[in-house]
Image 1 (tube, rainbow, N blue to C red):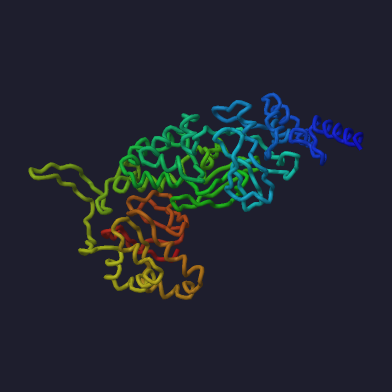
Image 2 (cartoon, rainbow, N blue to C red; image 1 turned 30 degrees about the horizontal axis):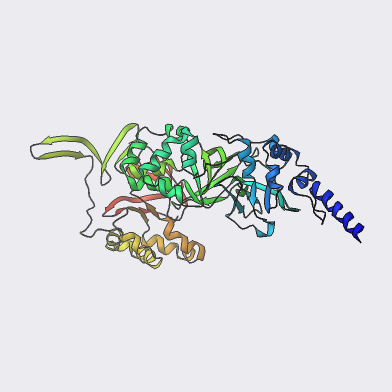
Length: 473
């Protein structure tokens, strides 16, 4: 009996030395070797991390494949190899069934967490790297294999803005604007968020006065920044070609993925993908999103037009001569008179209601909860109004549920758009999110989506302007 116990004890000691428990399971390093993860194991051993994880755990390892190391991407301010390897190891045992979207796991790298995401295309990621094989169980933990290295290692307090601040001077302009907008603290602490971060070259492509104008209008500046921030953590594996993502501003951005894997948001190419931050991710881009729309918000009365450097407008009428001095003031000459004078209240709803030919359109807008927008004097709005004759012709179409609900928003635009301020070819976004194409010939005639023309234009109201259009968008 004593002899049997001695043999059993000796066998247990042998198994322990070789990394196996009495149940025959290998430890994490042994298992990684069995799985063919030699590149990962080599780096663990070189960093002396293998001794750490051979102690009683439990640990969850997100181990890159050998091919992942061959194709490893380089990020600015590269972290030491030991830090990168510690970042791949989470505390506790997490199986595939336990993973939830935006779940975070404490890593062995101090003050850094591993963010797990599940996407609608079925992909599951760890810090943006696709988990390709799951639930390889060891004595003291579990291994999941990932197809890329977590090379983007954020600082202890690294956020979607502070990470760029620390490592990427090529984003100094947009970071300066975020500070001017007093949004830095929010983007630094809230999340999860994805920042589509334009580089300095994106701003250099714009009119030199663009940044000056933004800084003078904090509302426009904040709207501009919000148009580059997405809710949630969107790494490239979770994106699909042609999908639309919605920013905090409310506008839709189209994702394009080329055959070579290169990504773009609208026309902005991604120059540095999948930068990991403590509160989300950064996709660095080479252009700003919707530049025309943002510029218009801050160029309400100053426009480029027909070869002139600028056109100055007063209630949509071009100022022909500026700054004629008088003894008690200044006189400006207009090319045309202000022939439409709004009433005391003078909101869009008030002025349209006073014109009989728009009665059905007004009622339609009220029925679809647009009344508050048309009387809101804190925000400027442009409206494309439809007369009763056209409304009657389109009644059958308007009764269709999809068209019925969409039409009211297709005819409403944020900010004030006078015809003199429209480019010869441009795009504006309706409140529905639909992008409307505008064309204007040399005579100043305006068309929308190359189908509908203006019957009458530039009716100034207290809270914006309306035009009469000959079709329903």
